[in-house]
Length: 178
Ligand code: HEC
Image 1 (cartoon, protein in one colour):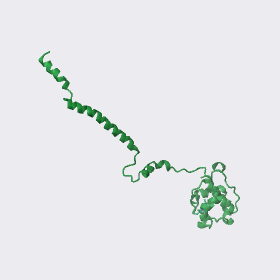
Image 2: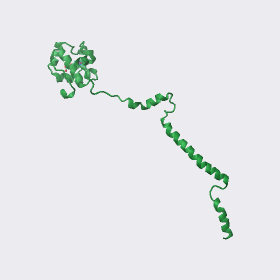
Image 3: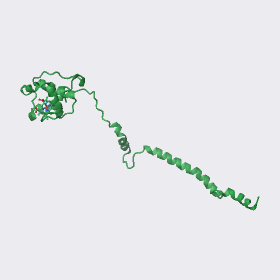
Image 4: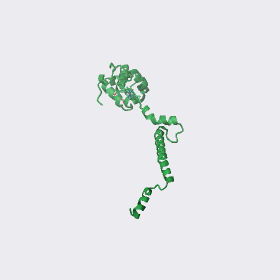
């Protein structure tokens, strides 16, 4: 071994960043402490997912509002019981046809209904569905086609018509040309 190599051997263990026992102690301490904080940080990040948004005054309500959309789906029962002709009339058509307002054929007035009844049920139904002159579509109501048909039959029959009340949806009643 030359003098040079002796110096090299002596230097070798001190090549890393750790130069003395104190630094070694600190390195060991950090290698334990830092992971612990990282774990605590991860745990906090994960659990904070359930907290309501910042600034929410009422945590319960904030949470309820966030999940609200699912609960707010409006379900309309397509199979709800259809209104009878009388119910449709009382609920919607009555407004004009009870008094003959706006020039509508008055309920029970055979002379007003007679000529209209002659045009046929489909024609009357079509008028009621789509509206005619001063009458808005469906008389302004939110009804099914069959319910409108029942309203038409109810009124037309009260005015001397002899139409049959439509029973179930679509299948039993042929749609008028729209
Ligand atoms: C806003 C007032 C108003 C309401 C509500 C209303 N109608 Fe009318 N209706 C009229 C008027 C006005 C006429 C006459 C239209 C014309 O021939 O110029 C009429 C005419 C009709 C006719 C005859 C159509 C024809 O071709 O001769 C039918 C059938 C009828 N209405 C059914 C209904 C039914 C069924 C309802 C309820 C669902 C209803 N109406 C609600 C104003 C109304």
